[in-house]
Amino acid sequence: MKTVFEMIRDGEIPSVKLYEDDVCFVILDINPISKGHSLVISKEVYPCFTDAPLSTLGHMMEVASRVDAKLRSVLGAEGTNILINNGPAAGQEVPHLHIHVIPRYSGDGKNFIPSKDSYKDGEMAEFGARLCLD
Ligand code: AMP
Image (tube, rainbow, N blue to C red; front, side):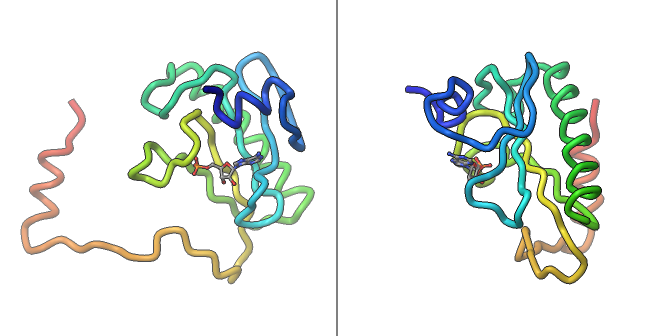
């Protein structure tokens, strides 16, 4: 079964498209966190971030950077959240690689990570040792 983004890619359902090239396309999110919330979507279906080639991810980040510049220059966004929900446990609803670019404004009150965790004594160093990249 096609993902909703494949159906948009193939013109089977409508979208407001901002950009397109051989690797990805950009649309406005239908349910925005703030107006102008954009999605940079791979043309090829990669269910998760970890499935995509680095060249694709690199290109999509370049496009996300252009979207960021546009949101700042046209909408006056003072910042953006650029994020990927990587897997259902992280809130990914559509199993097709996409980068959210969300305009933000000082004091707009939008919080993405409502609760934080904390380390016990010595635990942060232990996590650091376990998570060092090879
Ligand atoms: P995620 O939770 O990271 O998978 O995000 C999926 C995003 O796709 C959500 O923010 C949805 O609002 C958005 N979305 C789903 N269907 C559509 C659609 N038909 N057009 C535009 N955005 C969509």
